[in-house]
Length: 256
Ligand code: NAD
Image 1: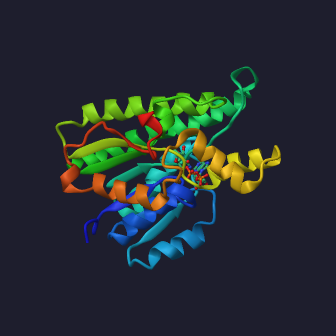
Image 2 (image 1 turned 30 degrees about the vertical axis):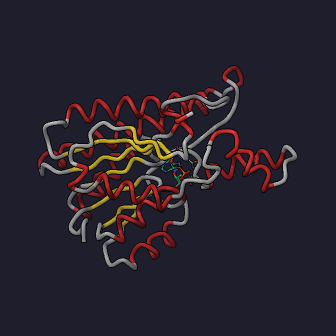
């Protein structure tokens, strides 16, 4: 299988997009290290059916010392990380002048600084083996803004900048670094925003459709499975010269 003998660390992989990506990588032969605060046992059981090893580390990625622990665990138990998917992320919606400063700090710590810390810790061994894949799950919000999402949009713009620099610094090696930029994907992170509209009086179906209608011309959600397949492509030999890309997968959101 394409990824036999490779170890993939997918951050925030106990639900949503991370779990979808982990599933596709495991199905294609990778050993998996899961991370996140959700039901990891169920996720691990699901992925183990593909026959590879599955590990889990509970690091809170907003704490750099815990990221170091995660990488020590990866080295001890799996040897090294060949594929790093920087996926964990949170959202908080509020206008700038009311944006709680502690929320700003936590969104930036997880959505941006953790990408830096995971990358700096993964790179030395990737370079030593002259092979590695870093896939950063950014967002359409890496390129455009939306009301109320100051911290998230700032962090995702930062992720695209960091992706470019890492791609340049690894350009003459077998390590690549790219970003995926999804539009709406129906995960707990987005359900939270639908729930807020329902709480404000909209019926659930109407709230879901309104969210799509405002931004996503296809009027259909992107799926975690589709993001997994795109990640798999970026891990392939065919993608060796895809470097520093910000790949939109957004139902046309950014084509407008
Ligand atoms: P989600 O809420 O379903 O999953 C987030 C994961 O991160 C969970 O496993 C959670 O436990 C974990 N997590 C949260 N805080 C953490 C922390 N401090 N340390 C470690 N893990 C932590 O969200 P999702 O929608 O799957 O989002 C995944 C990524 O995709 C995020 O970076 C998000 O910004 C991005 N994204 C999502 C959408 C969307 O529409 N859902 C669109 C574009 C980009």
